[in-house]
Image (tube, rainbow, N blue to C red; front, side, top):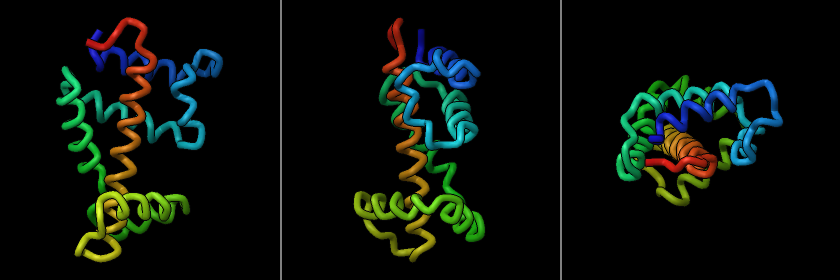
Length: 134
């Protein structure tokens, strides 16, 4: 099976109402809104994910595309969860301050957030794969 086929199977598990069928590798989503995870998975499925290098490039492209452009949306994203301030701090620590000011730093935090979430999804797919990802 290829990565996208396994991801589609995992989406079915993620959407199941029977929590006992959920694999332990998806437990990290308990604090997140499941619709956001689904949106990220569907974004990932829109790409050809043949090998690890391709997946890594796709994660960057998807995360970059999810970063808000308009000031209102940038601030709204931050206001939706007070923990996102810590995410921004981590992003700035790892990626550095941007010259564009506070809004640009929030965008850096968004990129960091989405990139890490996507990586968690990929890791969960690989962890759940019993047939092996080709």
